[in-house]
Amino acid sequence: MRALVAGLCLSSLLAAGLAAGLAAGCSDAAAGGDPLRREFRAAYPAQATPNGRTQRFEIVAAPTELPLVDGHRIRVWAYNGQVPGPTLRVRLGDTVRVQFTNRLPQPTTIHWHGVRLPNAMDGVPNLTQPPVPPGGSFVYEFTPKDAGTFWFHPHVRSSEQVERGLYGVLVVEDAAPAAFTQDVVWVVDDWLLDETGQIFPQFDTPHDLMHDGRWGNRVTVNGRLDTELHVRAGERIRLRLVNASNGRVYLPDFGALDVHIIAVDGLYAAHPIAAAGFELAPGNRIDLDVAFNDYTSARHEIIDRFYAPQPNRLASIVVDGVSDARVSFASPARAWVPAWRDGLRAPITHTFRLNSRRGGEHGIQWTIDDHAFAGHDHAAPPALTMKADRFVRLQFVNESFRLHPIHLHGMFFRLLARNGRSVDEPFFRDTVLMHSKETIDIGLVPLDVGDWMMHCHILEHAEAGMMTTLRVAAD
Ligand code: C2O
Ligand code: CU
Image (cartoon, rainbow, N blue to C red; front, top):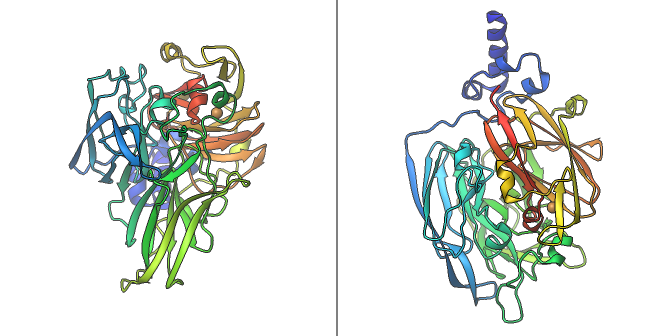
């Protein structure tokens, strides 16, 4: 038996690359004969590899007034007085230490969306920590296991707190970053402004709840209608898009630009993917490789076409002059992503049914398996317990006509099928958009023990019940 285990381990090391195999601690041995688990190999490491350096940040959440959208002063809630909040930039291996202070009139927390971290740092009120009261503080400390684009936002009354402006970006750079000439973050959000130009002060309205959440009447990139990025011909930039909207989905159209997706929801894809047609749902991130080889001078408008009758201008890229720094390097999109072609043959671990019904404090509830989540449910048993380090197939049936971007905390998954038809997405996700009446299947290998939230990232749907907990238990 010993020899057999060693043999498996060795073959996975050869196949997955020595460093990745070592980082995973040769956990193939534990997977026994499960070929889907074996195919996962060391797609991403089980453990962080701290480099000994700690990056300290201070974040204060407080009400303020800022010139936003078209420059008009808007009363918002902000991290460190900015909307979007600060972009925290660290290197893979760095430990992130955030001293957080709440100066809001409500309790809050910070959730680190997409970051695989210890459960106690996940920022879920009453489940992983007590909510931080007004005037209170909390220290978040963790070492990210993955390089990529992540974001952070409150997990208390998030349909109100995120909408008021509380969100920021966490960029974890590779230990040796590729030689992009610029690394740019674009946070996409929409705003529902009233006739005075202020944030419409009613949240979770019956209209928002019955539809796809709160969709605003202004669409901004980095808080402005007029965001413009200047580049020179010859540049090759990394553009990180984050959808921080409560409910709006974007379908970015880059026109004639040469744009490839290199990472989705933080993690690198197996290979670069043409960017056209990617639906950026609330919570989703895409990292783009944009090359400006063929243009000496031009202006490119980036347009959202998710709702075709009403396209939204997101931002412009202006190519101005020629760069002498001609860059050439291999795309960093070359991750090991299991194809899991046999994933649909695996037994379904659980089928979640998503629906709505009348009732509750908002008049409508959004349900998972006929249950609408309420705060006290944090103490209830989880909807599903999964064993760590085992392949799991989950199915979701959208019994409603509305959109549901389903998000899992603490783990990544691969989309296996839509409506029973297998799909080939060469990347992992932490959020996947489900359309009206659609059924999807996902495959995953949970690694981190703990209780993790699973919810719709249309924040009004989550607020009205479409949320639950998944437990990952040690084997
Ligand atoms: Cu951005 Cu619980 O999520
Ligand atoms: Cu939903």
